[in-house]
Length: 197
Ligand code: ADP
Ligand code: MG
Ligand code: ZN
Image (cartoon, rainbow, N blue to C red; front, side, top):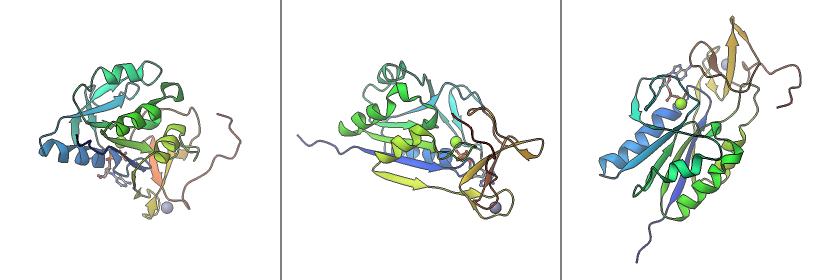
């Protein structure tokens, strides 16, 4: 019997680079072709709606909130019966202990197509661990840029802004426009002190 070839596709870049919009577009193509899809988002992201993924443009798609730790794989398995097209928004939020990267690799080896949107760097400018892991096992990678909020160049960094100034604090603080700005390499302000994560 012919076995379908699975793959892992990652869409990476800073905030506002269009990762979620692209993820939705890619999943919509499969829906148009009559295939069932399942889209998961981390259960820590409470922005906008509870059962949808929403892009900064306002484009929406139904999504299932997933745990991001050890209980994640079991939960996802229980939701993808018979579905071969699986999406993850904000995969960087999944914990290492979830082993979601190994699970995604297994999914692709068994003929599924997996799409992941992945924030490239945190606001300290450091890579997210799960993004690194997923990118290294991807078959295809879209690297997107936003428009730098200071100068209009291509932005690959995400700056956290508080009271109009670059701010460095907890690794994860959920927010959109107002809290975060896309910046190019020249306009991105690096943290001055060494922070051990
Ligand atoms: P991401 O998931 O990468 O944060 P989204 O797909 O949610 O991105 O949003 C991308 C949209 O954000 C763009 O299509 C544009 O309409 C809007 N946007 C707002 N500010 C910017 C910016 N500085 N650069 C690029 N797009 C921006
Ligand atoms: Mg997004
Ligand atoms: Zn700039």
